[in-house]
Image 1 (cartoon, rainbow, N blue to C red):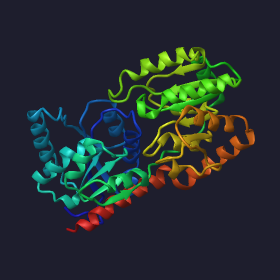
Image 2 (cartoon, rainbow, N blue to C red):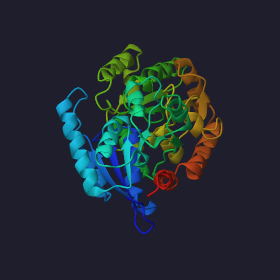
Image 3 (spheres, rainbow, N blue to C red):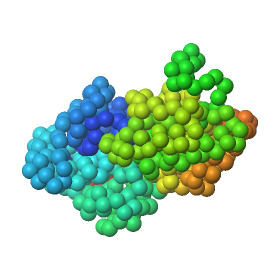
Image 4 (cartoon, helix red, strand yellow):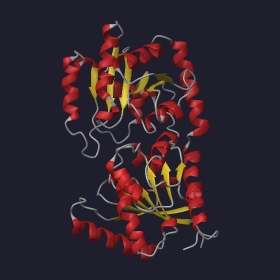
Amino acid sequence: MTGAADRPLRVLVGMPFGEARGGAERFLRLVAERAAEHGLELHVVLHQEGPLARELEAAGVETSLVPLGRFRQLGAGLRALLALRRLMRAWRPDLVFSWLTRSHVYLAPAAALAGIPRRRVAWWQHHTPRDELLSRIATLVPAAAVFCASEAVAREQRGLWPRRRTIVAHCGIADPGEMAAEELEALRARLGIPPGRAVVGLPGRLVRWKGQDRFLRAVARLRDEGRDVHALVVGGTGHGLDADFEPELRALADELGLAERTTFTGHVADPLPYLRLMDVLVNASVGEPFGLTLLEAQALGVPAVAVAEGGPLEIIEHGESGWLVPSGEPGALAEGIAAVLDDPALARRLSAGGRRSYETRFTAEASVARVAEAMRSVVALAGP
């Protein structure tokens, strides 16, 4: 199993989800689309059915389905391990790479059963682990390296025992290109957003740590201060987490008197048209591990406001490529949004600076190259 120079590096990737609802899944899709350009041959093992398989196959990537079942279902877990071992023995990867923690808990033992040494096993930690039990379990499972979406994630990962080599590989996105003004106007009309009203948006899965509730309270403050603003909440429930959060948010909008000033889109396959409608994009997460939506805002030239903690500190230069606020509390968010809405010259500067930041550091080409180079470094250290 040597990564010979005359052929692509063969990487077997495990992905827990069957649908691209979060940043980790969307970045895997981007890596898959560009893999061949960077000397990678991927085979993605999905653990859930869904449209992601079709999307990957359309990009020329072979996929398999190996359901994992729940951790307490020993029979399902054993069947998954045996299926993964068979696949690894047949496909003979140079590297076994789990995209997220749950997949690693299964793929690493399967690799051992298939005779693949741990120095050829790695995994992607997209979220900040902190006290998350699954991340602690995954770290116990042998691996040559843990790839981290940001330095903030890597710092937390390094604090887990046993220590594993960490590799920071910032995500990126494809250039979104242009969209006809007529299409944007039609979308705005379908969403019921009146002409001339400033659109303040928060894209992301509806999970509590994303802070959509604090965002709505911030918009209510802006309204109370006399600004004509509209809240655009883009996204739906993510992978069954916090399923009761959306009804709570809708009730909160009613309670705050924002029902006529708030649009909930639910899950959308492509969030970019909605981001184009925004005068300000907000990331209200506290301890955001990275912030793919901030890259999308920068690429589109939409001024972004985010909390000065975690991943946003590695994406935004305050006052140049975005606006950072000291906390995720509604008051701080409202002040940051108001600073951009009330100063057109600042908004233009943030728009231009954000686009430069994207073009310099976060393009698809640069981000996939980082991942491919890091994967090759792991295989090179593994030896023959």
